[in-house]
Image (cartoon, rainbow, N blue to C red; front, side, top):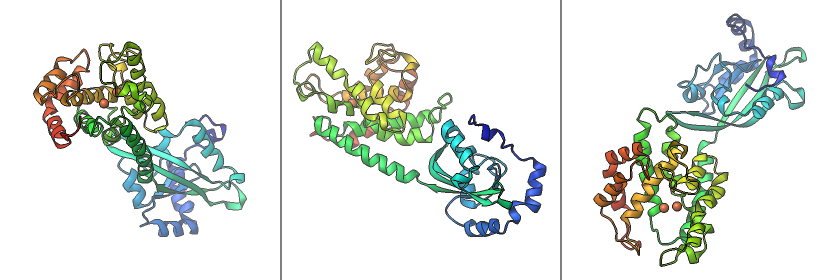
Length: 356
Ligand SMILES: [Fe+2]
Ligand SMILES: [Fe+2]
């Protein structure tokens, strides 16, 4: 909890006090009943809160959102958001709802995550309900405006443009980036169902498709003479080529999901520490980047290159399998082995023979 002296005075009310509250207190406030009536069937999640921001009553929309994840009535309104409220924001919230200067109100962006459900992003407004004899509010109302979809649309719109810009520059890869996104999702979905991969939640699975497609956006900063050089690269050119990982991480550092930066930075790292840019090894390489490494290489093998023919699915698969424990995370290669048919299907569905 925020290390805030104001907050320390906000003791949770006892069960006994709660009974009193229900009998004689907040719910007797005529305004409380008006709000309850107005918001009972509203699509805006709404709560009535006691003086310590504990939920006294929640409407159906609120319960539908959080009822599954937490005991709402009797717990703090910010409980679902608490892990994602930094100390500064949490402290500000508690100070403002007890400050006449701020109208005993707070408004801000909050988010909640649970492994089995997509993240919820919302604007939360807390306002005073009853202030007997000019003292501190005896209760509050809390209203959520869910903005998850708007945020995703805005983000995807912005970064889709970036992706298009990078494809214009690196124009020889056709639908490679989309395919890499789709393969990555296949592996993530399988891991979501496996023990030991708690960091893979619903959002990870839902977002990796789009984010993995941006793995090479850093090539925007690679000179055309190097990017499109027909022959093998000289050592110094290769050094510049490798910088697309660091450039990509820089470009994607503003993307709210850290997975974007991790993938851009580490998709060329190898399990045995022989990769770049930092020669990370094993699980020090972020999981999302280990997934994309397999997806990226499988697809590159399937495509014809000036220096090699297009590999068949069988040849590309055995190449991936042979590099378990050297280039790739062996546990992820075992997932690839189970799901390789999906890879073949994605490639043939999204392969245009005009791609070079
Ligand atoms: Fe790359
Ligand atoms: Fe790639």
